[in-house]
Length: 245
Image 1 (cartoon, rainbow, N blue to C red):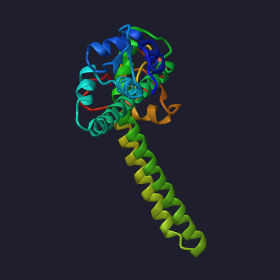
Image 2: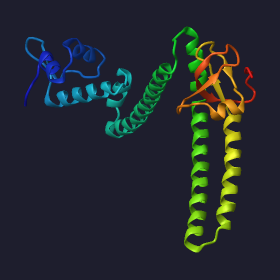
Image 3: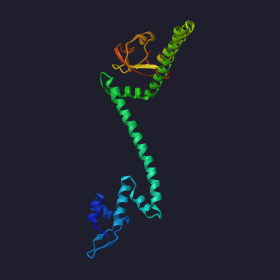
């Protein structure tokens, strides 16, 4: 059976000699025997044990925890439970890091929408990010109603074309108009715009906002505070907020 010195064991496990000696001093891995000259000698079982210790250390388990585990009568059962628990912890950490990455990407995206980057820009972005999910949810509602309006118009038009019955189409158009008015009112009631010049949140008039040029995230408006005319950033509005009207 092979015997390994401290240096050989350290090399096989990818650790330092001092680490092996430290585990010995903590009674986590005591050498099986000593040579005539007093050198530590480790067996194949010691090597396997050391690899297990290194594996557990890489998972983030403390020395004390590993020491207690190896003293158990059936350490493999406890280790299996710990591995499951560690898997949950790592999964949560990955999820948190992914959320941070998404937040970072959103932050970079919002910065591109600002003409001039200043300290105040962080406050602007903080507000936009705070209500980003609500804004996205509102957009989904708009799309759903839009699809419904389109479906009504197409269905009633097909009835007219195929069966020659025109009145369902007229009713469908009236329903679509009512839905359009309601969803437009809902949209402009829950939107607010951020001026990139004076960093003021404001709500434009309905007519101006309705006919203004726009992109998926901005709308070309006149700021009610400083008079700037340009693309302002869209955000969600809650009525308790004090804004410039």
